Image (cartoon, rainbow, N blue to C red):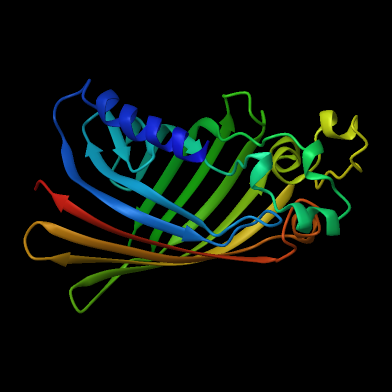
Length: 255
């Protein structure tokens, strides 16, 4: 399911962008790996399309696209569309791990990936970049929303751009309950009710961008998220409070 949604977005976003004048900056491929959050879930490894398109009106950056609503020297406001790939098929849960938590895997429903629409404001200056995002599910998966605030400070080292960043996200009740709690259909099958409710998730990341010759660009990012106890204590999760992830990508620049 996760691969299908990713493939659809990878195919659709570049063609949507072509509605405006040609403005492709770069194209490439990346690899993302992270710890599995769900009980018995294998480590998550995914291929990522690295498409960067910018025009006066439209943009596509990886798996996020949108429209520029307002631009000034230090501030920009965008309407965005982005995939949410937190879903899992019921068969991908670990049967033994769930039984240890008192849940029969056969009684569970799939958690679907989603599609979000939202707004993103970005402030840029000598002190770095601050980004505020509000996005909500429009696919009917969770019907929830996420609010996030992220600060990054880019600087140059040995020809590479290094960006440490801090992020705080808030998951609404519906969003957190759908992905990390039990569903009404499951509770009707005698699965014990668990609803984490709204949750704050802090995170840190370190990104590096390094040109390789005139056209190639190597990108890498390591990240860490601290899950609140309401999520890590869910019978659907591994119980770990920390989630590590890494992304590596190689792009060809058209500039």
